[in-house]
Amino acid sequence: MSDTEAQGSVPGDEIRPAVNPASVQSTQRRGIRLTVIVIGVFITVVMALFLNKITTPRVLSPLELRANGTYVFEQARIFKDFTLQDQHGQAFGLEQLKGKWSLMFFGFTACPDVCPTTLSMMREVKAQLKPDIAAQTQFVFVSVDPARDTVAQLAQYMPYFDPQFIGLTGDFLEIKRLANQLNIAFVKVTQADGYTVDHSANIAIVNPFGHYQGFIKAPMDQARVKLTLQSIVTDF
Image (tube, rainbow, N blue to C red; front, side, top):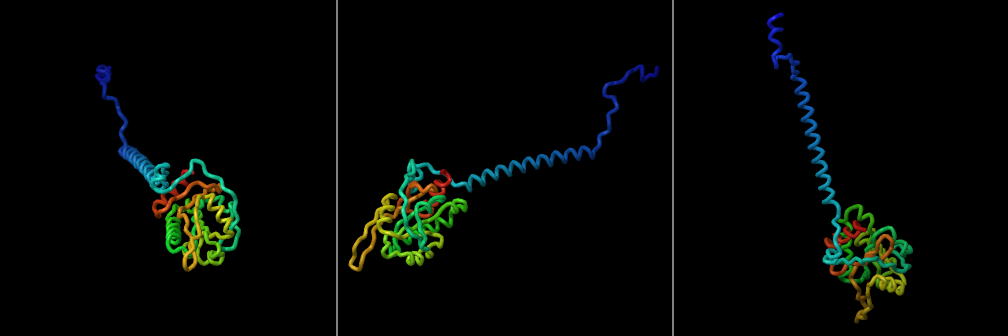
């Protein structure tokens, strides 16, 4: 028996396989790549959530809506059909209000201040709406002075503000019935040089079902109208 055999094997003296440095470096590189990928995915998810939060319109509570001058009914109100004409001479009724949100403002083309100011504000709102909400929204101007606001007159007047704005005129009683249903008051006032029309400056909001959803109370400004409109459409 040899001395080595007699002494037996000593723990720790076993023969270990040689470590390949290239293999260790490859494993380390894979670990680093995996860590970088995980961090990258995490950052991407966080950024996506952040962008979604800042780009999604904020939904306001009823109290916040009222604080911004907008009143939404607990249950939208159904109103009767009507028959008017737009600035192109085409018939326009309740059916043309369906499928989109409609902001309806009642005024007249000879109005010296409130009407052009409101229509200009509506133009700015339209330009600043999120594209998907703008595509769902139409802006409607209903004349309370149909004797002077003919189809031809509206055809000249509406493009001053936006070619896509809809101008409506027609029979006085038809306009009056529509205005009453949307809680819009107006009255003809005689003056020395003719007459004017006193009218409500509120904007009626009609939902895509053609129902009276609420109204925006005057006075109003572009930022508040945009904020409340986007909230209402997003929450509908």
